Length: 63
Image 1: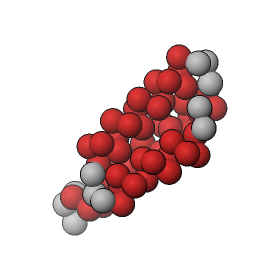
Image 2: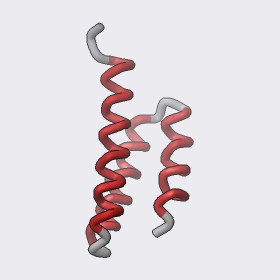
Image 3: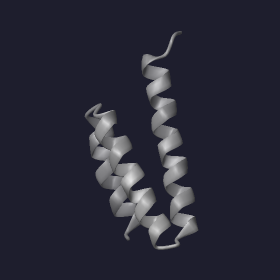
Image 4: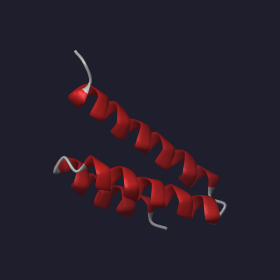
């Protein structure tokens, strides 16, 4: 898997505020890395998912 290309595609959804699609695609990509025994890829997508969650918390969470 081309992780950077995958993350770039997911970023287009984030730029539009489509967090649902972004999270789903990131989880799917993480699972593909897991199936391929690519732990570095799994870790990278977990970090990316955390970033999405942090962004959502900043945008929608209580101030």
